[in-house]
Length: 411
Image (tube, rainbow, N blue to C red; front, side, top):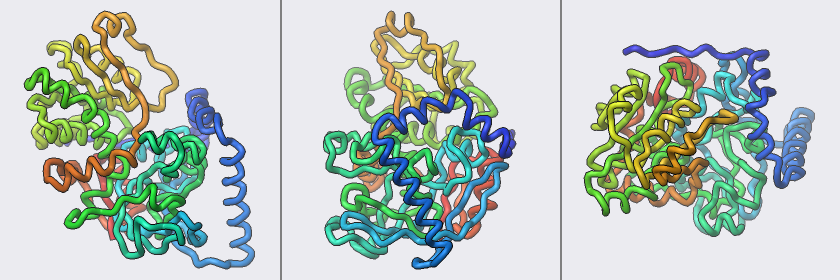
């Protein structure tokens, strides 16, 4: 298969990317509220590490660490402290790659390295705090990648990705940029709000199948589910267009657009177009029963009433927006680019709606699991690699460098 291999960035090129203007908006969002709390958390973590070096009061565990140059290695770090009254400690048993992980691990994102990698997992509960009632030790749970308290106004209204109980964009697997919550490729993970965050894994659902529900499967779902039922009610033959990468050398993984295609079919769409420039991704989409094409072929096709942009690039986003039908919707995953050109007059003339943003994953997990339990949605059809967690450094490096689609690491 015609697969592109990616070159990691070393220390100099990585930190040139971190300090570039394109990375400034993410930093500004992270610090626009509760900046003191974020900085205090980082300072407390540094002080704890220093104390543990002097006198180890807690046992050690392994945590997969990403360093510039595409280096991945297990490092020995202290286990998390005992949970607070609302928290839990969990042991990840199945961890999935995210479509953004290649950018992080290969040093091409604005998230500073080194960091503890991984944010999609199913885990086993080890211990819980005294006020936790929803989960118990020994139970298998999905761990949402975003930290959410479940009590603040945004959480109560379902906007768990913007929880006001923690600083903005608090999440696992993004290092200091995500608030230093640790990574899922580790022996233990601290969950501060167990009842609010953890979702019991339904009986009969394999942890390997459900690992990516913690982020990417829900991300594919949120682009389609809010819009498709009403659209099909008006026109049962309405098309859904999914725009993946418009370049062959995209570092982004391809699981979210493929999950979006599966969700569209699970919710009743008969016509799902899938446009991507990467031959291996098109081949995988064809195996899933999607109508596959190169993005250049879209010029000869009519616009679609629902367009999903998971390109991660300004050019892909413009392609998606240009293919929205009158009164249609374009739902975009956005990307790490600082700016993009929007065809404003075209969207205005067509009366189109454009939505770009992050998913509120904790709110969507039960809906996605319901589709899986009914066997209408099978995320395992997207998985291309399953390996042992012990093999993570070598397997993941090859996955990232070689442009893999979805890897699951398990015990």
